[in-house]
Image (cartoon, rainbow, N blue to C red; front, side, top):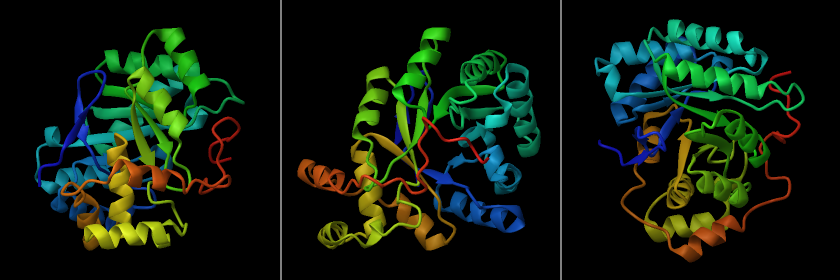
Length: 279
């Protein structure tokens, strides 16, 4: 299966749907990732803090598919935002995955209380110049954080990965990203542990299009030019989550899903303006 792609502001391309690997670990995780690769996934999203980098690297090597066919993303932990620490942690990630480079490296959280994310961004800019990473970006950054790193370095992130799902659609932030030419990725695109999959509105749309509610939500993300990073371990769900390119929602339906937003919609109440990563 050949996926549709987005093109980043630095010219690199990546598939429109990625596999999230949060809590996918060890030998079992390798098998789950291999199943996803067989289903057609080529964008594999991991993080040092997920403890899944080893499984991702091993799955890539076992797959027999050329490294160049994959788009591998990993993320910088918050306690390593200082310049030299950030570079060493990227090198450690490469060693764990047994790769020569990663396709995309993200600052996982801005951690404004520590206020070292400017230094971390400068390290990512350097890492790209050294060829350790092809594209650099951020995760959970708000507009104020984006402004500061762009003004400091003159380098705009290629990606901003944010919490986005029907209960937390992030309309304003998505518009901010688009204004800067930054691709928005969505983590927890189905709303981790929520009841979004049972929403009557989504159930009705699923019946209309002959899809399930997860596919409706993922298509809603695609229609908004967002790249969903969706975790799935069962082969059936892995395949279904890629089967979203043969239908389109109407503008009215997209807005109806946007209206499902809730004031307390965040899955874990993690506000990037105050959240301290994995305290």
